[in-house]
Image (tube, rainbow, N blue to C red; front, side, top):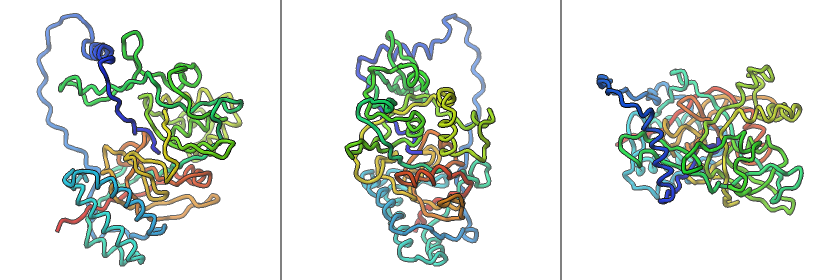
Length: 416
């Protein structure tokens, strides 16, 4: 999801943060102050074998690479990846699991792939041509057999106000002045490569307030400037999940808001709570149904929304083009996907095969070329993919109904 979280930018720490940071480290490292004999160190465990998440697909097992969208939109998405890669060192490596590829090799592959898609509209001819140029890799998925859950996200366009005016009283906050990022690895080679988000109180770094404290307890009042106000806290909640959106004001002007940072709390889906309490079945779970439930049962809002402690802070973005993905490049509707950056190669072209919602209430099988250009807090592991649907209410209806299993493939250039 867009952004869907995980796009936080590190902020520099001046000397003013030194003592709070050292206080935090002391708390982390000191533990109890009692002196006890050190136990004998345990025998070193053998290094853990890296988990394989991409497997080579033999050529005789390739799927038919039929695409349900226009080739021009795929070329547009590839151009965004190319623009980013051109700014990287040509020998910078990207891990494809079975091997690593340089930025230059990925760029050449993107050009060849988009050219084939435009030049060969017939699926069988296209598939055979790509076999000569690429190795096809398939995600092992969540079950080791290739099952990947596809969901959708979009850029909402919501009515709002620049100043609070009932019922427009729900703020979308900018970056708080008291939010501190700490990279533990900068304080010693023996510390984990872990980043913490907190705030300084009484010369100590503490966890940043959660959603309950911010929305219902006024925990950051005076620390963050509202960029806009919405008339519905549920819409605000889902805007946090989408990661970006546009707010339309009464004078016709708009502002595009994108992810700036989060409060560092873990993302927790509200779906399991609704199912556990019998408020909704798993099959009924969708963004539209959750919104309808909370509109009918407003007494549930605080408890249900506070189930997710993660909170997003926004920044103003250019209104030109699409919203930005995690590489600060505009996303392309229907082509850009959000994946786990720890698992899959960023900016890489791929192909998905599965089922998608159609206008109304139906579904249809589909295949589609995609590009990995975003990430999200809820998108974790080799079994999750979030497809960007575009902007506005129609995109939102389809994105909210996208919840189907499918397969995910990547194209790795053959080395000549």
